Image (tube, rainbow, N blue to C red; front, side, top):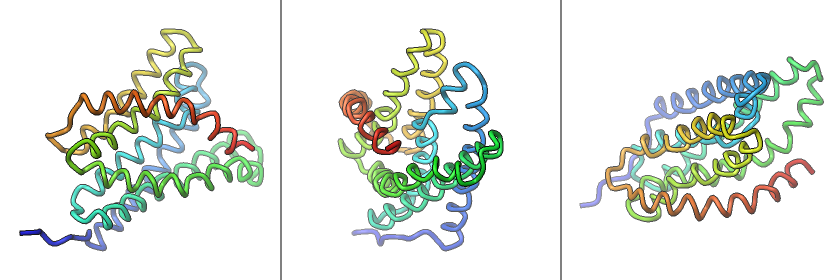
Length: 216
């Protein structure tokens, strides 16, 4: 017997989005503060992958109770958008205050990221919903945070092994959080590792193209 699809209660949905916004504001400020500290923490603060991963973890957690893929996708997208846009606004807002560059300068800096964030949130919200599916598809979705973290881990090697080790450990700890959050006992670690390696290669190839479009 099929179980009826459920939607989160309005109060729960509002609570999820409010929590995502609060988390985005908090981690946006945290990232900007870390960006001012010389050393590995500066690299971490200026990065993107770990902060996006936190939003993805929130989306995965928010969609755990949704049995309908459609409802889960909408909720996942809403959660990602609430977090990411709050993160971008607080990150660039604090940058404007600290550097005294003015609102319009900060807005010009943030605008390409805000435009890019829209489709990214749609995709990652859908991926968060799919991550609850058993089998290869769900496992590959869980591999994505590890894959999109790989380019930044490799880039950190420029600072030396000790420098890179700190950054890699911190990013890796965040990248595996979805595996803990998902609550699935049937996850194939082999599939996750293989998917991470394959998708990480794709991320390494696409990253320069994406960054050139954002900064153009």
